[in-house]
Length: 435
Image 1 (tube, rainbow, N blue to C red):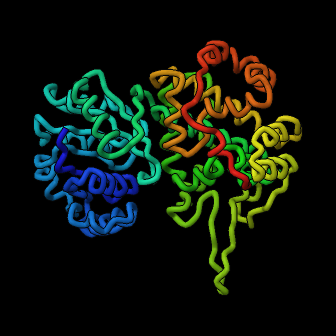
Image 2: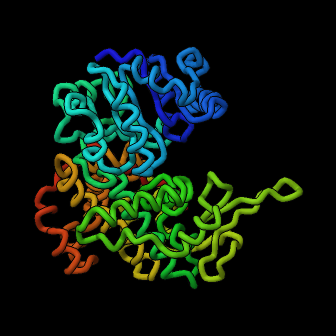
């Protein structure tokens, strides 16, 4: 597959900027970076260069605005739509792309979970086979995952060539997903993150947001705590993802995707997260240059200083991990029956079960979620986490003891556990000796 010219529509957004850089650097393609304002496109070029730390790609990045969108689409071997995660906006842009796409060119959407098939229907019948979903993760330079999503119309040969291009030219970890809301990664990731938000609201008098993050830190096998992750993504994007899942799926976990009222209130105030200067967390720079780290207190509906919580099971886990003793770390967790330790165990086990469930429902096998969560979220993959727990106790017994019988029945736990295989990932690289 020869992709020499790429047009990225919505290139001034975070993902549009990052993806442009990937095409220009690894793919050595000429990239038209299209946004509504030429000045925004120029700024995006500078951000793209910084994202891959390669000034050499400057010659490949061409900032343009919508006034020449038709020309850019007609010239492109690949058109990548990366506009706002809003179905009406995507439909309008997709229609414009469809009018100008060459018969031999590929068009794809970088949506994080909207229906690829619905968007494909906006193309004339002879071009629908050229369309697919290609979902990169942020930051794309470090997170190599790329979920690829065919529609019933997608040309299989073209689809396979695109997967090969992504894997062998752009060096992506390619995982195929069914066209299901939020695909694999965000379906699993935001099940975990949104549940953490709901628990923050439930335990608001115990501390809420930073309390839950302190229970689910890096020692549990993830790069950053879940609510810090939500702030990094943006509450508005988080809401779009979970609303889409809740409205368009109907599995046993549907209620987990209900967006908390306090988060909607933050969005209404413009407090979207890191990108807006504050959301669940915010940082103040004081007159003396020191930084004040603050968190939104759900109980008082105002910001307060973050708290350095100290839970005995966390201290024991972090110490054991610092010694490279992973078995003792997880044993300390399982043998502690404080409220905080029980919450932690429930989250970790339900993450495993839901990941395996989605792997079979949306992916192409029980191990589908492993590559997704490792290279898209930098979380310990579910099969690898199973292996970590199996060094301490029989996992099947642990799951049946710690998770409710009704949940296990709904998810079909016996079926899932009968499909277990070894993970391609080493759990030890994900559990960190830090809070």
